[in-house]
Image 1: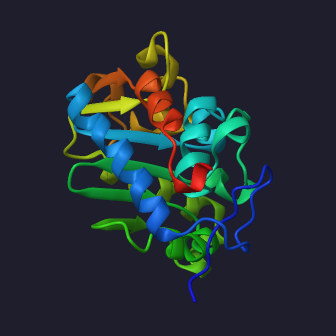
Image 2: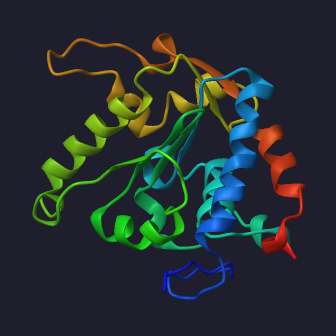
Length: 207
């Protein structure tokens, strides 16, 4: 039997409340935003890499933990293990970054996602902090490669906001030390309103 994630306020990878089929339906709803906003991908970043972005956190809670209703209004991650997660949804599939332990836990919940590319280190390398950080930056650059217009749930001035994110700042420096800013390489649009509409649409798990 597959392992599912919980929808409770604190989240738990062991309770069989939210499964791959339900997650796949929610993924499809998020993907519909791409055509509505004419963007190539939607990027969600959790934890310190996005200064704990409230809107990305809500989207991750909705997609990976099955949060709905009043529980979804919380500003914190439903499971602290998701602190090192990045998800990029595009028309042809999904690109997912996580740590090795979380990748194993998420495998069941993402099992129905078509063309899901997972960026994850091996266990041994993961324990080396420098190797871990270098791999995360390299994974992020590969994840966003090929997508010109990227939707990010940050209202107001999303370009200015994300330029302060550690993961976005790390993008600016390449191996040769030259700088190439993320917001100069990609067009950024806000998808907060569209995601809110998705959250308000009831599904079986939301009852």
